[in-house]
Length: 519
Image (cartoon, rainbow, N blue to C red; front, side, top):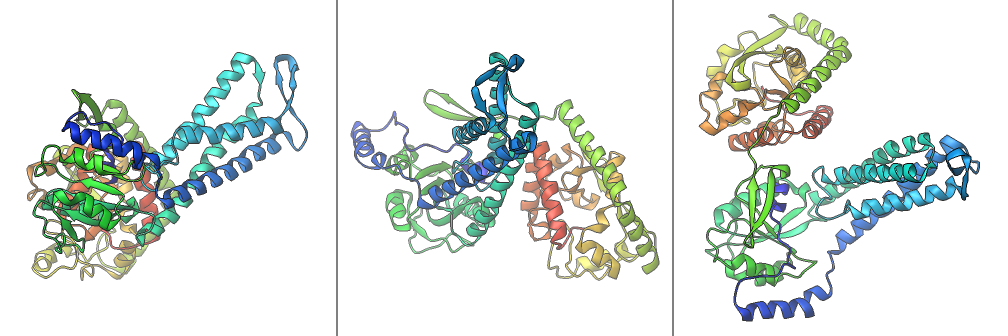
């Protein structure tokens, strides 16, 4: 959701090419005398950025000088030209200081501490890694061209250790920031502007993801019923779309998010951008196309219009080979490492209840083909026969398509423990080995569920189903069917290997902090 909001973000300093001359002149005068004179970011953003600077510096001092001492000891080793010719006796103590300053500069130049990337998503980490490798690549080129001999071991220790520690430091600060955002602190105050339906949708999505750093403080809708609230929320309606300036002043919002433009006057978005204070207040456009990843979106200006191009999802042979290779290596390693646990669970299931050890169930996989999915049996033998009776009862979980009960009477005592820690899913590693499933992917549905699918939901079958997936780590049985479909289709349309790694890491964390799992 956050990435969608940032797509099409409009800088308030852009010069308008349309509108009345009088309005343009007034806007230009205000820009020169008012907002642009003091483009200060909110205090929390500046404070957080300073903390990152201090942490990065301390990390690099520890890593670079630590690598130097580990490689050379505490002596006064010097950087040398070819054939041991000294370069004005530049010691590694001085070279390390230069390296630290250059590294800090590289992190700053690539905007790794920008408010646009901190707090959510992988972009912050990517920029840290990118800046580090670019710097060391430049050092290698300079050393080659000038025939400076820099100890390879010293660099080989500094780079990976520095990258890992920098990313770890950023991750620790992010956890602190997420904790603050859960209480409403350290977040952008957002005023939503658009139709009531689009405002309601965006408000609910942002409320579900407080860690994204957007706290909605009000809304302006065409009806403009002051004292009303956005349906399903406590967000106040501050007036019509013509009252944006007054609403910003009243709520103290620093971000205006336009959720739809269908019911707005043609020049309204431009007028809103003129009214915002440059450097402190931001205009954000939330396109109606959601769950499309950044790499598939490209902005191309045509005749002054910022047209957003959306590429269709493509799965190259290289991507498919890479995903299969990771699946095979990960599942084989998992079976070997977890073999004692797998054996223990098999024996426990066999001794504690009647019936087979494994539960085999027909599910729908890649391209809509039937597959046989394996799980440790966690229910009584006649569980399928009891399902029709349970479906008539009031359920406290799941949704209209997926059946789920928090206290399902069909689950055995051992099965309840296995489900709590997702241990019953482990035999699906063999599904991954035989190629019918992947480590990460959409949930494999039952044929009865597929019979209820709308046409667009069948896009889930463009990839193999997974043991875990975006749906499983984003709410599980608490999600509605629409939210479940949206998450699964978002994964299918925007697959990346890095995304799989993030989902696997979240799955491991969720397993250590167990909860309800899907059947």
